[in-house]
Image 1 (cartoon, rainbow, N blue to C red):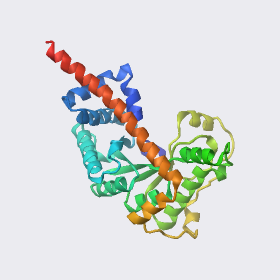
Image 2: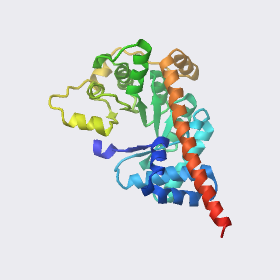
Image 3: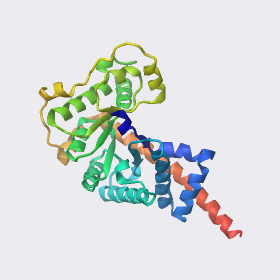
Image 4: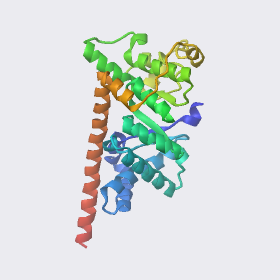
Length: 298
């Protein structure tokens, strides 16, 4: 049921862009006032403030990102997530409306395991490897976001090709393998394909649990006539010969080590998120400085 699951994915890059817009100046100012000079608290409040606004529009989950710089610190990720949930509850938003977005490092996945046990639902992002996907499922994560287009981008550059037939697209093949593994072994974690480059990638994954699709690609799909055959079939997956992998930390790290694409893209994604956080922090710090200067001149 798309209507009950429809959700908004807020991350540092989107919040940074919104914070630069005049119509959201009051949201930023209120977060600065709440933080009372503490940049970290202000940043958290800003994420929650934008998330709160979106809950008024979107009927399902709102995904709120944990600081990407905590991606290799399990305890700090848990603490940050709990702080965010507490801030949401202060404004009357129950934790059931929130997906805590965490990068799918080993440490991030272990944090999500603890949070899920607290009843806090988690969206594990930057999924580029079946090792990550299996670890997330075994940790009981609510949802994972494998990045179809970014996988294809890496292989296009690595192999020096212009593109792939839809069924041979490495990103499509990765999500298909994850989906089939989950259904074969009875995992409930939702597979939500993301980061699409074209509509062929989307139609080739018809039947996936969820897909997050950009407005331009949605427009293209809506103007396309014809049949949309089912490509991913949960019932068929159950009869496939797919060996089960017990995902220990050693196995996870070895499988990631053996997958240069996944290793590079996870690191690149974390760096990208962190870069946007630093830019947003500078905006917040400038606001705090301006507020303090105004106080001193009174």
